[in-house]
Length: 258
Length: 106
Image (cartoon, rainbow over all chains, first blue to last red; front, side, top):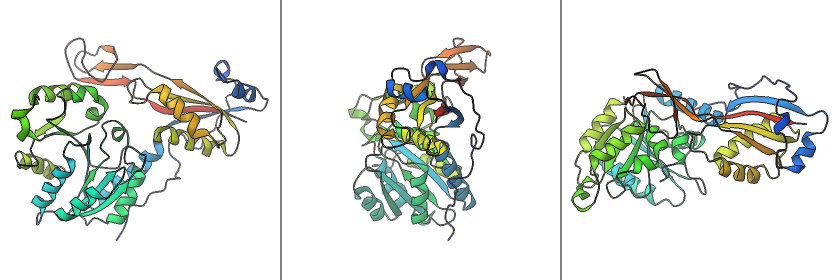
């Protein structure tokens, strides 16, 4: 079966146009750094204009993944949260409920261990575990490699469980169709204001563990309001992956992605 | 750290073996990237490469937005998109940049 194929060395924007602009950085060169200042002052130095996005390479790879997924009619959803928000439980229930409806494949990102991958496999899904080691997020290259290994069938749903972290995963496009942030009612109502980048980058927020609302100090409406203050178009669903409450709304949302 | 790694990879590729003295980047104030952390990681990541010892020069464009309701331009200090007129329909016009501008080599 065909696998995503991208060319990381293709010229992207900013490549192939070197302009010598000696002196552009003149007054700033070497500020606070004697060794570099001495070297920079040497004759023959040249200023090379790059004007390229820092994450250009990741974006190219992500575009390759996105094109391949679209060609296969596969929807990939990037699921992000803090550790402990209930991502794996939500995935397990989704996989069980999708049995016989749509094939589900899972990319499981964690810094270490195969524990979550084993839970997902027991729930009945094909899964590939990506251990990022010291890395705090998945990137498009890991996604490409994971898809190659996973070989999801056309039309399937690929759920990507990103590393539990509300900062870095927001910056790395994987080529996914949509981005979901999961927060649980045992976290603070003000989480969207504390991690605005993540909520600004999301298409959907799932508020999980609503079965615990009677026991915690969490205001769903207020949390929604905070989330929309950084992302006015955001959809918000309240669910309990444990009891199944609200899960139908999540499945309906998934169906809308096709 | 992978942000820094991406910068250093791109710089070393373009330097093609020439020593790199200065790298200039543009990091908007509305990105989740902290300038001091970037500098710290840059020094670690460049070690052993042609960019070892290079100065990282960081431009930080401030956040700015334009209201789609009243067309007013205003400063944004965070991602809470609210125009002084009360509308939340705001387009971010500056502050999300994350770019490698140029470098000094040779």
